[in-house]
Length: 157
Image 1: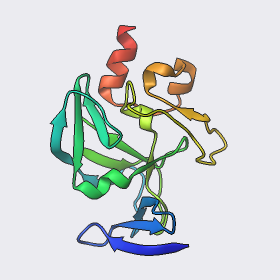
Image 2: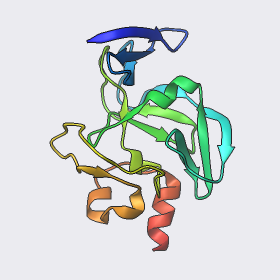
Image 3: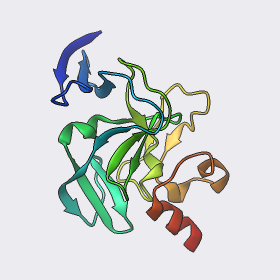
C-alpha cells in the first residue's frame, strides 16, 4: 500500500513513492520508449569513495546524484534503466509503462559496493546477492549493459 506519493520531476514524468515501511522508489509517471532519456543527471557532490547513495561514474569518482530524486532508482537483476555515466543520462533499456518502478543493475556502475546486500528483486534471473562488478563472474556481467569504467576495469583484469 502506498502511504505517500511525492512528485519528483517537475513535469510529472517521474514520481517518488513511499510505502508504509518507508521504502521509497522511483516510478514512471509516463511511458518511456526503449533508448529514451528518462532524466539527465549530474553531480550534487563528488567523492573518491562510494557510499550507499552514490553512483560510480569513473574508476575513482562517485557522485551524489542531481536531481536528488534519482537516488530512489532501485536495483533489479532485470533492470529497465541504465545510468549512462558518459552521457550523464538515465536511459530506458526497454519500454517502461506509467506506474512501473525505474530500476537499474547496481553492478553496472559499481566496481566495489559500499554495502553489498541480499537481493529480493523477484526477477527470474535474480542473483540473490548484489555486490560490485568486481565480485561477479564475467558470464553474468555479459548479460548487462555496463558503464565504460566497469568495462575498462574488466578489460584490465
